[in-house]
Length: 118
Image (cartoon, rainbow, N blue to C red):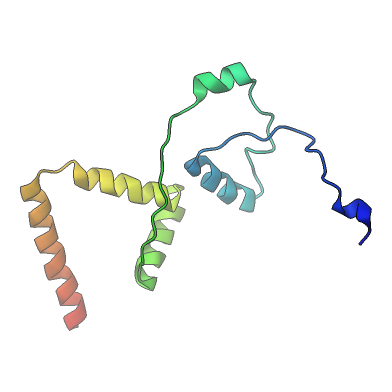
């Protein structure tokens, strides 16, 4: 390796700023041979009009292999990013009243205990 390899290279083009969902969906599209990153970026004035305010925070949690496979299947089937699927499901559940949530949780507990008994 020569010293020329260590020089900082100037970026040839401006990169488009992406939100989390767009980045994940572009990564999936890139794997399939398509990418929105290779398309020309919008002018700054147009970009500001289309900008969405997104405030995400990283979350770390543990899922079983079965749940990961189910989430992967949902992502493939819907074409949505896995994080987007989880956000949609959380929003859907949060829209219910407390009694409905308690009833659902009771049903889920019975279902999961039946699976572990078998």
